[in-house]
Image (cartoon, rainbow, N blue to C red; front, side, top):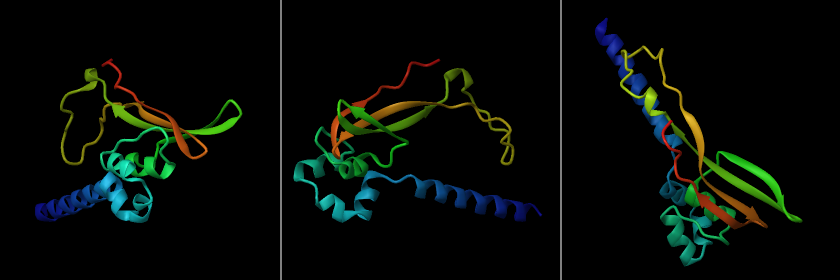
Length: 141
């Protein structure tokens, strides 16, 4: 009986880990899956994208290759020009909730809260970056 439970837990764990890793695309993964998009970039932009960096004037495709799919897309207007801002979120657990809260392999009754904050963003006009910013994490609560 214990062997069966262990086999089930191991199978479940491997499956969950695989799904999590597949969902976390990296810059290299996006480039390898879309080489035609990467090849259309200038040599300067290819170098930046490969490092996960962007610059003003880059296309939306270049930013997507460098940073991935944004968590939020916000349409707006800058004067008389339509714009779109892409926000990328991070999640932080306050230190006051820290500590080991592992009760056992099947007890997930307590998960500490996570708070989201914008970690970076880019604003586009006519399909090109007109403004971008990296935001430092907030101070601990």
